[in-house]
Length: 241
Image (cartoon, rainbow, N blue to C red; front, side):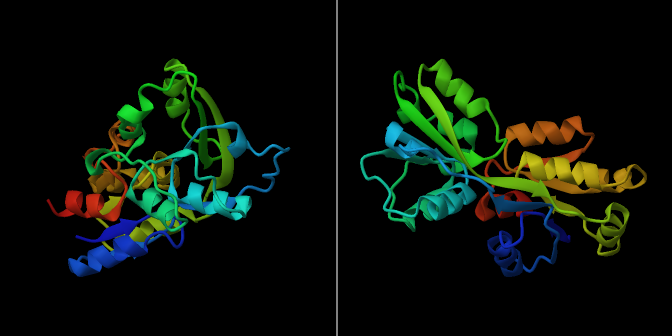
C-alpha cells in the first residue's frame, strides 16, 4: 500500500504522522490551495453583531475569520463547528463550540444536532469559503432561521501538469488516495487524463462523507470507502480496517 495525500499545502501533517506511525508509505500532492479573500471589508455593523449563532464549516473558516476580525470574539453567541479539527481551532481562540458526534462530523451531522433543530427566528451566520455548499443554509432556512454568510477564504485548484503528475503517481505505485472534500475529488477527476483514468479506477479512494462517496461513484470510481469524517483518525480507521 502507498497512500496519496491531497489536502492543501500545510494541511497533511497530521495524516502523514499517523501513516508513519502505522509504517504506511505515502506521497503528498496538494490538489487544492486555500487563499484569503481579496476583499472582506464589511460595512458597519459587522455581521457578527447581527446574529446569535455562528457556524464554522472548517478550520480554515476559523483561521481566516480570526485574521480578518482582529478583536476579541463575542462571548454571548452560540458557536458550532463541523468537526473536531474545527472545534480545536476555535478552542485555540478560547471559543467553546458544539460539534457533531465523532461518527458524523459532516454538514449532515451538524443538521442532526438537536441545538440546530429548533431554530425558528434564529439569526445564523455561516463562516465558510467562497462558493461552499448551500445545503446547510437551505435546511436551516426551511427550519425558519434567518441565514447569512461570511465568506473569508477561497479554494482554487493547484496548477499541475496532468499527465506528468499522474505518471509520477503510477511510478510511485500509489494505490490509495485520501480525498477530504468534494472539491478535491473534482480536481482529481479533472486532473487525471482520460487515457490514465483506468489506473485511477484501480485505486482505493477514501472519502469523508456519503455525499462525496456518491460523487466518486458517479464519476466511475469503483473502490471507495466512506470514512464518515475528514479527520486523520477517521481516515486511518477506514484505511486499515
